[in-house]
Length: 332
Ligand code: COI
Image 1 (cartoon, helix red, strand yellow):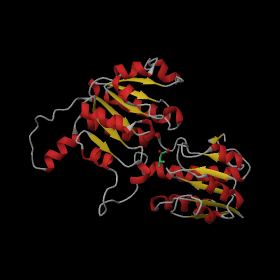
Image 2 (spheres, protein in one colour; image 1 turned 90 degrees about the vertical axis):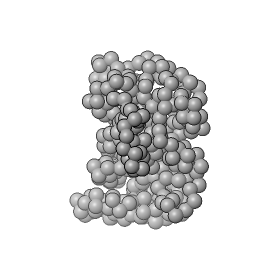
Image 3 (cartoon, rainbow, N blue to C red; image 1 turned 45 degrees about the vertical axis):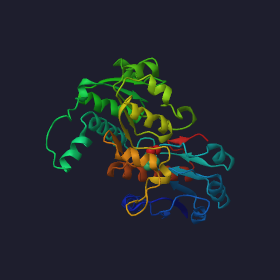
Image 4 (cartoon, helix red, strand yellow; image 1 turned 180 degrees about the vertical axis):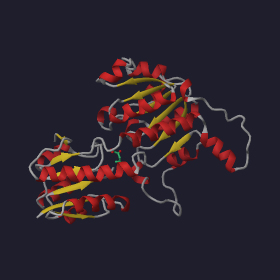
């Protein structure tokens, strides 16, 4: 009988998984809440396909174990593949798919919400109110429609972010190597990142992680930006050099930042630190700043997105098993 084994299943994913199972009684579905590692790989023994979702590395040892146990398909429930070694998958004869469009609105909305919170200085006002300081001044905000927002990356998420920003009335400029025809017709593309850096009052990132975007925002690029620029990163932590960002926040070059992702997030995110010593002093400092908003890689985390991620990844796994090619197969 066909078998699919799913890793890192959270309680909020179980209803969607059970619904999928009910629609596919011919498939045996089993799952665990643990991530796929060399140790947990044996749990999937006998599965034709494995479904995963994790921000940590899919290690060679884990993939090798899966292959030894006869699995040949890896279907991930998210978009990013920066933690996957495609050459290793190729070596072990795996096929890979992702869920490229589970809900671009989930991440785009979060990015724009955080951006607008920063320009309206809501964290400062909230903290004042919590301390019973109910005065307006000096916490004056700006309106999103009065600023120029630079969107880097105009794939599915970047495009939705642009629509939402335009709803606010912002002037939007964008950079992407290839141009989306609809956006190009609006004339929003600039020719270079340097142009975007020079013009944008706020910048939101919607690009993948990986070697080509590693530390794309560093001391040199911050220097090219407007003084007081607002930075929003709901993409990948590796895109921003955190040390350079902290220095730019200290100098005022960066006026405010919202980070849903963070370079060392796997050491700190996804855990409850309330009764433990917080181990990351840099992140601790960022969390405390009134002009910084931190969320733990949660931009994607909506009911709609979670359900789509489960349904589509399970569909992809089954398509592979049945000898088909999911639309979102990724070349290994
Ligand atoms: C992605 O879809 O790539 C995300 O960043 C979501 C996360 C849960 C891995």
